[in-house]
Image 1 (tube, rainbow, N blue to C red):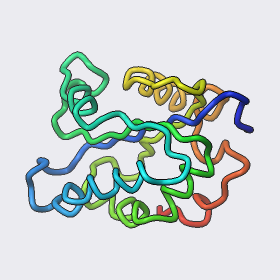
Image 2: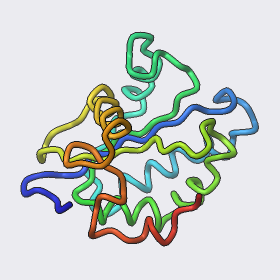
Image 3: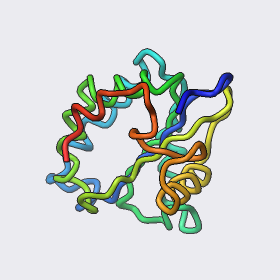
Length: 163
């Protein structure tokens, strides 16, 4: 799949924490959120990320896509291209936290991550992201929603993913 002209790459990833946000067993994760988010925002190719306040409101909305679950942690962002996102995910400190995700999150073996193309300037919503994720879970990779394997020009995820 090649990137359509006039488009950027959107991604949604989410998980359900094994413990409350204040629990010391997930402190390494929670204490580094700002560090990882700042790194993302300063990475080449980064375009936009849903703010922490908007993300929290969306996560805690009882009628929203996560049903108000207070243990959900999620990120919704836009990148210029797949290579930029791939570099951030697999070649920065982010990878260290990705490798430890099973310590902090339920759902071992699940992929709660989806990507899709958005017109330049578009800011996706959580609802849009979950619609793409649900479609991808039901139908697999397509031009509408996809995982890393659908992108032919990225390779680091194959070499560096853990489990």
